[in-house]
Amino acid sequence: MEKRFSDMTEHELQMEIAAMRAKAQKAEQMGMVSEFAVYDRKIALAKSYLVDLEQFESGKSYELQGDPGSLFKLVYLNGVFAWGYKNGNTEMEAYPVSMLITT
Image (cartoon, rainbow, N blue to C red; front, side):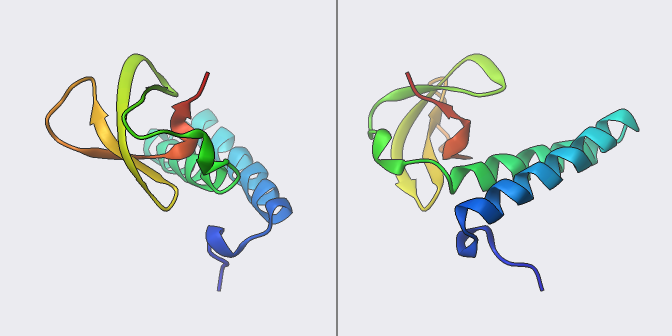
């Protein structure tokens, strides 16, 4: 049984991220777009466990990695997920905190 990201040490997370990057690269080279997207999102989630959550502030807007020009207004954090509104939409969305670009 595999370990959950939340149970991994920093070193284990970095090793897992490297392994997933290799798998994502292989999927991309083989033209497996869906599989690449799954690994890309898993990598973002794993990276979130390495991020200092104290750097994020409710009410502040952040740019989203991989989506230039979009703004995400953070309402609250729940674990390693940031909940808020993207580009002023009225429907709340969640993203792994590693996808928020801090300045």
